[in-house]
Image (cartoon, rainbow, N blue to C red; front, side):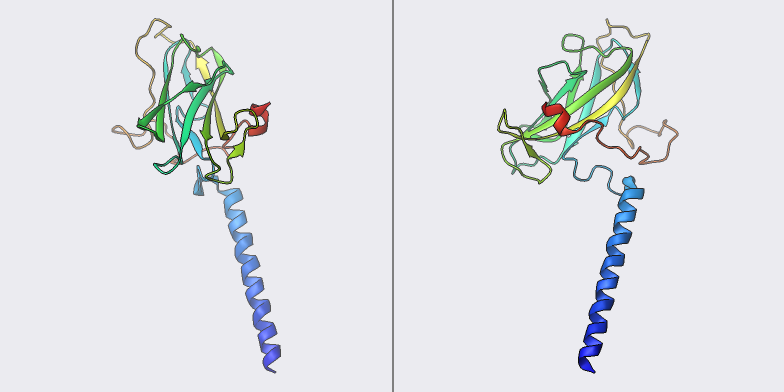
Length: 197
């Protein structure tokens, strides 16, 4: 009798485990806002994905990464595949947990129409499993891309001031009119394999 009860209990535990895993999978697939930037390692937070930006004007791009004082990583950016990658400015010496870069016409111009902005984390070791070895540089890398739409603006290419978006929660009010945390389901628009080619 005891072995029968133990067998039933084992099956019940297995069924509960499968149900929990199924529910978690459904939540992650249907609700990308639960973990908006989980496992991306490097992200562009401003400008927001799909935003319209003034063409021909400087644009401040900012982002975050999982870089810490214990890791040795660098974040670079590329706009419209205009190589080489450009170094970003870290929040502190060697601390790329937050970073910025000003896109200016001397490097690359935001053009009218679709513009692709790609950030790249390069690390000396695979600090997270999502970092993949680049065979050319021998660095562990991860890319994150967004598209923004350049529109004709009154600022023009002669403007000295970069166009800066406020991050959600900054400033006196949210002028986007959207739901907080709203985003489409595709966090990365370009795969690492495509960028390494």
